[in-house]
Every structure is written in structure tokens, then in C-alpha cells.
Image (cartoon, rainbow, N blue to C red; front, side, top):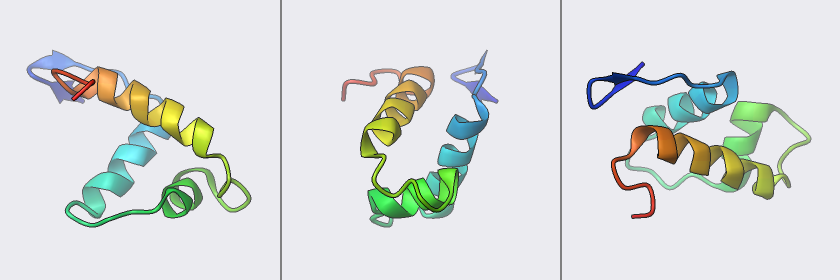
Length: 67
């Protein structure tokens, strides 16, 4: 994958997260839905883990991840 012309390596979890977000672009997605879609059933309460993966994905893809 590339971002701003630079090759970006995504972990399998980051790739799955991006896939789910891209599929549902423009829609509100709950933490539970993201966790079930990316990590499977039983992880619906792992919001801290989800936040870490989203932060990592944003650092890799966004010009200004803090915004």
C-alpha cells in the first residue's frame, strides 16, 4: 500500500481495520462492530486495543495524525 507516494507496511490487523472502515465510509461504526469485524467475537470490549491499532494506522497514513 502507498500513502502520499510512499510505501506503507500495514500489519494484518491494520489492513483489516482499514478494509472495514473503507467499506463503511461515511457511516458511524461502533467500537463493537469494528472489533468483531477485525478481531472476531469475544473482543467486543477490547476498546483499548482498538484505540492502539487506530492510532498506529493513523500515524502511517495521515499527514497530521493528531488532527
